[in-house]
Image (tube, rainbow over all chains, first blue to last red; front, side):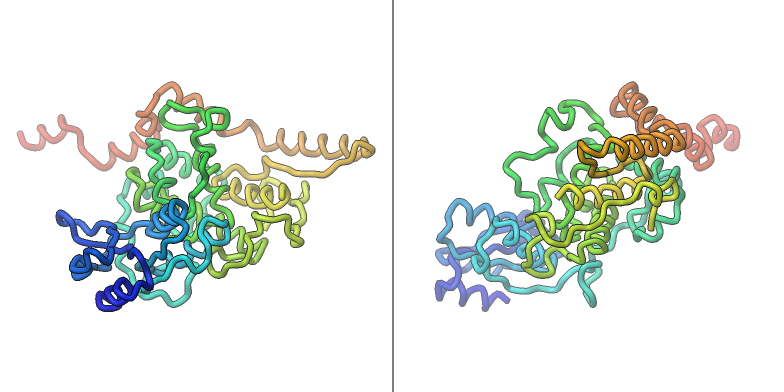
Length: 273
Length: 94
């Protein structure tokens, strides 16, 4: 991996390379350049994950001619696809060195498991949501249970915007979550559940299920479960898996595959499935 | 576009326990009868569902501020079961 990156930089295949480097005891994202080639010896692909493709998109926006290389797990590659679908990154701007990947529902046969969430405590299991739940596990609760449990989770939110800031596919210049007309600003906790649901809706057709949001969340809200549900719905209705290819998202153009609106009667209190 | 988003949102709301409170229907200005029927049916449905469960929550959270998470009665019960109070512990030691 190190040799490959060195060759790329020397040959000018890429101008900069985004990877991780141990600094002050932490694996941190680092930009490797040709002028400081000896630094590449310290390139690592550690447990730590950062949205490198988000940095790449910002760099490419500022300097369109630059050739970027980066370490890429599967989640990074899916996010790269999503970014190019949404015109944030020219396809082909970024060259990737593939590294071992993390588990994800969007990918079959992923083998790496170091990102398994820590065990959920007793109290959280009683009144909240176990972060390790699958969608099916959670849907076993009745309507009341689902509602209370989510509200218990959402109430802890300290509105740090960490989930949005870390998200590789959040790129809007103006974010609805900070728009005073849409979501009340300045108060804690934020307007629940609107704050989280707005983000969830915006994840439709975009979320690559990388799980960075949940890792970043200081209060352990099971965001990945919520966005996984969004992904499941999008996959059921539109047969679209964000990041799996560079096809247009069903939400980006007026597509031909219009679903039928839910009929009033069938959507009774038990819901429709 | 709207119908796509609404379909996703309806499923999402169901997932967080707010089932059936969102409905989308196309009604032309020439379809007065359809309008009446849809509005009546939806009103009946909403009435049957009862008041919005969010209402109480929002007020509670606003009243308690950031500490709202500790305010649920359920939370207190679970905590008591888990940890004996300081007074009880003292008795055991004595």
